[in-house]
Length: 282
Image (cartoon, rainbow, N blue to C red; front, side, top):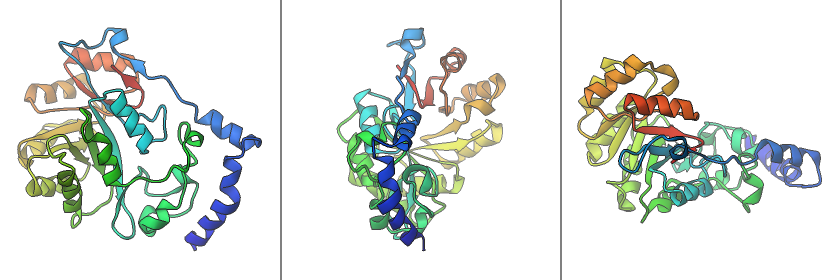
Protein backbone atom coordinates (compact mmCIF):
# COMPACT_ATOMS: atom_id res chain seq x y z
CA UNK A 1 0.00 0.00 0.00
CA UNK A 2 2.80 2.43 0.92
CA UNK A 3 4.51 1.80 -2.41
CA UNK A 4 1.34 2.81 -4.27
CA UNK A 5 0.88 5.91 -2.09
CA UNK A 6 4.50 6.90 -2.65
CA UNK A 7 4.13 6.57 -6.40
CA UNK A 8 1.20 8.96 -6.24
CA UNK A 9 3.20 11.35 -4.07
CA UNK A 10 6.09 11.23 -6.53
CA UNK A 11 3.81 11.84 -9.50
CA UNK A 12 1.46 14.49 -8.14
CA UNK A 13 2.81 16.03 -4.92
CA UNK A 14 6.58 16.24 -5.24
CA UNK A 15 6.56 18.29 -8.46
CA UNK A 16 4.90 21.04 -6.45
CA UNK A 17 7.98 21.28 -4.23
CA UNK A 18 10.19 21.89 -7.26
CA UNK A 19 7.95 24.40 -8.99
CA UNK A 20 9.66 27.75 -8.40
CA UNK A 21 6.47 29.64 -9.20
CA UNK A 22 4.47 28.16 -6.32
CA UNK A 23 4.44 29.51 -2.74
CA UNK A 24 5.18 26.08 -1.25
CA UNK A 25 8.53 25.97 -3.07
CA UNK A 26 9.43 29.41 -1.78
CA UNK A 27 8.49 28.32 1.75
CA UNK A 28 10.62 25.16 1.48
CA UNK A 29 13.48 27.20 0.06
CA UNK A 30 13.31 29.70 2.91
CA UNK A 31 13.16 26.92 5.50
CA UNK A 32 16.23 25.19 4.03
CA UNK A 33 18.57 28.11 3.49
CA UNK A 34 22.29 27.41 4.00
CA UNK A 35 24.21 28.69 7.02
CA UNK A 36 27.80 29.83 7.17
CA UNK A 37 30.05 27.62 9.25
CA UNK A 38 31.38 29.29 12.40
CA UNK A 39 35.16 29.32 12.77
CA UNK A 40 36.47 28.36 16.21
CA UNK A 41 39.97 29.63 15.45
CA UNK A 42 38.59 33.10 14.73
CA UNK A 43 37.13 33.01 18.23
CA UNK A 44 40.49 32.05 19.72
CA UNK A 45 39.64 28.40 20.32
CA UNK A 46 42.32 25.92 19.31
CA UNK A 47 45.65 26.41 17.59
CA UNK A 48 47.89 24.50 15.16
CA UNK A 49 49.87 23.30 18.19
CA UNK A 50 46.78 22.30 20.20
CA UNK A 51 43.84 21.92 17.78
CA UNK A 52 40.20 20.96 18.12
CA UNK A 53 39.32 17.83 16.13
CA UNK A 54 35.89 18.43 14.64
CA UNK A 55 33.40 15.91 13.32
CA UNK A 56 30.83 17.13 10.79
CA UNK A 57 27.54 15.75 12.12
CA UNK A 58 25.70 13.99 9.25
CA UNK A 59 28.08 15.77 6.88
CA UNK A 60 28.19 19.53 6.47
CA UNK A 61 24.42 19.78 6.78
CA UNK A 62 24.60 23.57 6.91
CA UNK A 63 25.23 23.64 3.15
CA UNK A 64 23.73 20.38 1.82
CA UNK A 65 21.08 17.86 2.94
CA UNK A 66 22.17 15.71 5.88
CA UNK A 67 23.43 12.21 5.08
CA UNK A 68 23.84 13.13 1.41
CA UNK A 69 27.01 12.74 -0.65
CA UNK A 70 27.31 16.52 -1.29
CA UNK A 71 27.39 17.07 2.50
CA UNK A 72 30.27 14.60 2.86
CA UNK A 73 32.20 15.96 -0.10
CA UNK A 74 31.99 19.37 1.58
CA UNK A 75 33.38 17.87 4.80
CA UNK A 76 36.40 16.53 2.90
CA UNK A 77 36.81 19.86 1.11
CA UNK A 78 36.77 21.75 4.43
CA UNK A 79 39.19 19.20 5.94
CA UNK A 80 37.09 18.12 8.91
CA UNK A 81 38.73 15.55 11.15
CA UNK A 82 35.80 13.19 10.54
CA UNK A 83 32.29 13.22 9.14
CA UNK A 84 29.48 11.16 10.66
CA UNK A 85 26.74 9.27 8.84
CA UNK A 86 23.78 7.14 9.92
CA UNK A 87 23.15 3.78 8.25
CA UNK A 88 20.05 1.58 8.15
CA UNK A 89 19.17 -1.64 6.40
CA UNK A 90 16.71 -1.79 3.53
CA UNK A 91 14.26 -4.67 3.16
CA UNK A 92 16.80 -6.53 1.03
CA UNK A 93 19.62 -5.87 3.53
CA UNK A 94 21.44 -3.05 1.78
CA UNK A 95 23.02 -0.35 3.96
CA UNK A 96 21.70 3.12 3.13
CA UNK A 97 22.35 6.53 4.67
CA UNK A 98 19.47 8.05 6.63
CA UNK A 99 18.97 9.08 10.25
CA UNK A 100 15.27 8.42 10.89
CA UNK A 101 13.69 5.01 10.41
CA UNK A 102 11.00 6.52 8.15
CA UNK A 103 11.12 8.19 4.75
CA UNK A 104 9.07 11.30 5.47
CA UNK A 105 11.79 13.52 6.97
CA UNK A 106 13.97 13.60 3.85
CA UNK A 107 11.85 12.32 0.99
CA UNK A 108 8.20 13.23 1.73
CA UNK A 109 7.30 9.57 1.34
CA UNK A 110 5.38 7.18 3.57
CA UNK A 111 6.74 4.09 5.34
CA UNK A 112 9.76 2.67 7.15
CA UNK A 113 13.15 2.23 5.53
CA UNK A 114 13.10 -1.48 6.38
CA UNK A 115 9.85 -1.96 4.43
CA UNK A 116 11.39 -1.05 1.07
CA UNK A 117 13.99 -2.65 -1.18
CA UNK A 118 17.04 -0.65 -2.14
CA UNK A 119 15.71 -0.11 -5.65
CA UNK A 120 12.49 1.30 -4.22
CA UNK A 121 14.37 3.60 -1.86
CA UNK A 122 16.61 4.73 -4.69
CA UNK A 123 13.59 5.84 -6.70
CA UNK A 124 12.76 8.56 -4.15
CA UNK A 125 14.21 12.05 -4.43
CA UNK A 126 15.35 14.35 -1.63
CA UNK A 127 12.88 17.17 -1.07
CA UNK A 128 14.13 18.39 2.27
CA UNK A 129 17.42 19.63 3.67
CA UNK A 130 19.62 22.64 3.00
CA UNK A 131 19.79 23.56 -0.70
CA UNK A 132 17.99 20.33 -1.68
CA UNK A 133 16.62 21.98 -4.84
CA UNK A 134 20.14 22.71 -6.12
CA UNK A 135 21.10 19.07 -6.51
CA UNK A 136 19.83 17.35 -9.62
CA UNK A 137 17.94 14.17 -8.77
CA UNK A 138 19.57 13.68 -5.36
CA UNK A 139 18.82 10.17 -4.06
CA UNK A 140 19.56 8.09 -0.97
CA UNK A 141 23.20 6.96 -0.75
CA UNK A 142 24.75 3.58 -0.03
CA UNK A 143 27.45 2.85 2.52
CA UNK A 144 29.89 2.09 -0.31
CA UNK A 145 29.21 5.44 -1.98
CA UNK A 146 29.74 7.22 1.32
CA UNK A 147 33.06 5.46 1.93
CA UNK A 148 34.26 6.30 -1.58
CA UNK A 149 34.13 10.00 -0.66
CA UNK A 150 36.89 9.51 1.93
CA UNK A 151 39.29 7.33 -0.04
CA UNK A 152 42.51 9.29 -0.52
CA UNK A 153 41.46 12.05 1.91
CA UNK A 154 42.55 12.91 5.45
CA UNK A 155 38.95 13.08 6.72
CA UNK A 156 37.79 10.04 8.64
CA UNK A 157 34.46 8.35 7.83
CA UNK A 158 32.40 7.88 11.00
CA UNK A 159 29.60 5.35 10.71
CA UNK A 160 26.72 5.18 13.17
CA UNK A 161 24.81 1.89 12.95
CA UNK A 162 21.10 2.58 13.46
CA UNK A 163 19.54 -0.78 12.56
CA UNK A 164 19.22 -3.28 15.40
CA UNK A 165 21.12 -6.09 13.76
CA UNK A 166 23.93 -8.41 14.81
CA UNK A 167 24.03 -10.95 11.99
CA UNK A 168 24.91 -8.34 9.33
CA UNK A 169 27.52 -6.33 11.19
CA UNK A 170 30.22 -8.17 9.27
CA UNK A 171 29.00 -6.50 6.07
CA UNK A 172 29.82 -3.06 7.52
CA UNK A 173 33.31 -4.22 8.44
CA UNK A 174 33.75 -5.81 5.02
CA UNK A 175 32.75 -2.57 3.29
CA UNK A 176 35.38 -0.67 5.28
CA UNK A 177 38.02 -3.33 4.59
CA UNK A 178 37.23 -3.41 0.88
CA UNK A 179 37.84 0.34 0.57
CA UNK A 180 41.13 0.13 2.46
CA UNK A 181 39.77 2.35 5.25
CA UNK A 182 40.29 0.15 8.31
CA UNK A 183 42.76 2.51 10.00
CA UNK A 184 40.84 5.61 8.92
CA UNK A 185 37.28 4.63 9.80
CA UNK A 186 35.36 5.02 13.06
CA UNK A 187 32.26 2.92 13.81
CA UNK A 188 29.88 4.18 16.49
CA UNK A 189 26.74 2.84 18.15
CA UNK A 190 24.49 3.16 21.19
CA UNK A 191 24.22 -0.64 21.09
CA UNK A 192 27.05 -1.97 23.25
CA UNK A 193 26.75 -5.52 21.94
CA UNK A 194 27.19 -4.30 18.36
CA UNK A 195 30.55 -2.77 19.30
CA UNK A 196 31.63 -5.93 21.11
CA UNK A 197 30.90 -8.02 18.03
CA UNK A 198 32.54 -5.60 15.59
CA UNK A 199 35.69 -5.56 17.72
CA UNK A 200 35.83 -9.35 17.49
CA UNK A 201 35.51 -9.20 13.70
CA UNK A 202 38.26 -6.60 13.25
CA UNK A 203 39.96 -5.07 16.30
CA UNK A 204 41.86 -2.55 14.17
CA UNK A 205 38.76 -0.41 13.56
CA UNK A 206 38.30 2.39 16.08
CA UNK A 207 34.98 2.20 17.94
CA UNK A 208 33.05 4.91 19.81
CA UNK A 209 30.45 3.92 22.39
CA UNK A 210 27.57 6.41 22.18
CA UNK A 211 26.14 7.30 25.58
CA UNK A 212 24.18 10.06 27.28
CA UNK A 213 25.89 10.67 30.63
CA UNK A 214 29.44 9.66 31.51
CA UNK A 215 29.73 7.29 34.46
CA UNK A 216 32.49 5.10 35.79
CA UNK A 217 30.40 2.14 34.57
CA UNK A 218 30.37 3.45 30.98
CA UNK A 219 34.12 4.05 31.08
CA UNK A 220 34.71 0.51 32.37
CA UNK A 221 32.33 -0.94 29.78
CA UNK A 222 34.14 0.75 26.90
CA UNK A 223 37.49 -0.45 28.18
CA UNK A 224 36.16 -3.98 28.58
CA UNK A 225 35.59 -4.22 24.81
CA UNK A 226 39.32 -3.84 24.21
CA UNK A 227 41.81 -1.35 22.86
CA UNK A 228 40.87 1.38 20.41
CA UNK A 229 37.45 2.07 22.02
CA UNK A 230 36.28 5.60 22.91
CA UNK A 231 33.29 7.17 24.62
CA UNK A 232 31.02 9.54 22.67
CA UNK A 233 28.74 11.28 25.21
CA UNK A 234 25.97 13.85 24.80
CA UNK A 235 27.35 17.30 25.61
CA UNK A 236 24.11 18.61 27.08
CA UNK A 237 23.83 15.75 29.57
CA UNK A 238 27.22 16.11 31.20
CA UNK A 239 28.65 18.34 33.91
CA UNK A 240 32.19 19.54 34.56
CA UNK A 241 32.50 16.67 37.03
CA UNK A 242 31.49 13.90 34.62
CA UNK A 243 33.63 15.39 31.85
CA UNK A 244 36.60 15.48 34.21
CA UNK A 245 35.89 11.87 35.19
CA UNK A 246 36.35 10.76 31.58
CA UNK A 247 39.40 12.94 30.93
CA UNK A 248 41.13 11.83 34.13
CA UNK A 249 40.53 8.19 33.22
CA UNK A 250 42.56 8.64 30.04
CA UNK A 251 39.88 7.18 27.77
CA UNK A 252 39.30 8.82 24.38
CA UNK A 253 36.20 10.99 24.44
CA UNK A 254 34.32 13.01 21.80
CA UNK A 255 31.17 15.01 22.58
CA UNK A 256 28.00 15.39 20.50
CA UNK A 257 26.39 17.72 19.40
CA UNK A 258 28.14 21.05 20.09
CA UNK A 259 26.80 23.96 18.04
CA UNK A 260 27.69 27.05 20.09
CA UNK A 261 31.08 28.74 20.31
CA UNK A 262 30.72 29.23 24.07
CA UNK A 263 30.07 25.50 24.54
CA UNK A 264 33.11 24.61 22.44
CA UNK A 265 35.22 27.01 24.52
CA UNK A 266 33.96 25.49 27.77
CA UNK A 267 34.93 22.02 26.59
CA UNK A 268 38.29 23.20 25.28
CA UNK A 269 39.09 24.90 28.59
CA UNK A 270 38.20 21.66 30.39
CA UNK A 271 40.66 19.76 28.19
CA UNK A 272 38.32 18.24 25.57
CA UNK A 273 39.73 18.23 22.03
CA UNK A 274 37.18 16.15 20.09
CA UNK A 275 33.67 17.44 19.38
CA UNK A 276 30.89 16.86 16.87
CA UNK A 277 28.96 19.76 15.36
CA UNK A 278 26.42 20.80 12.75
CA UNK A 279 27.89 24.26 12.23
CA UNK A 280 31.31 24.72 13.85
CA UNK A 281 34.56 24.59 11.89
CA UNK A 282 38.21 25.35 12.60
